[in-house]
Image (tube, rainbow, N blue to C red; front, side):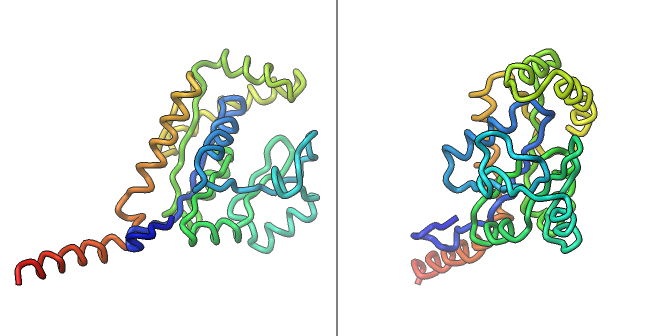
Length: 221
């Protein structure tokens, strides 16, 4: 992120990993974060899943055939990938690396498998991982039904998988319970603010402090 008056205070970008079981609210939180924070970019995933009504190529997903997706895996073009409910999902590596180098943050809406791969990648030092829990299992099921995207059989399948997804909560840096959306969003933004200010993410701080010390020396002459 640019700091015109003090370029030494520029920082490296973050890889923000946001995970949860289906229906716990990570996609809603991701959308709200993108709406209010211009420094955050969304990592557009590639997928073999067919487009849903209203989804746009290159905006919501890069829609690929299974053959195309497997070729991307073989070429090392994905930062992470996983198979979920019979479809492949993955994050193209090149745009993420470019964003991080420019000081922008990249937001990943991924499951625990994708989060694990990012944390184990060459970009792991830039990662901050956040897991979203539902307030209860009953609330989770209610949210899945209310969003109306899936039939009863898919809802049941997602509920069956939720227990395994939740079991990975302790692998994350931060864990939030999404009982109140506004509070959860505020907590998420606070985490990101704190992570941006970490000393090890601001490589020019030493230069800045050295300049302050020189100013002290000049005053003492």
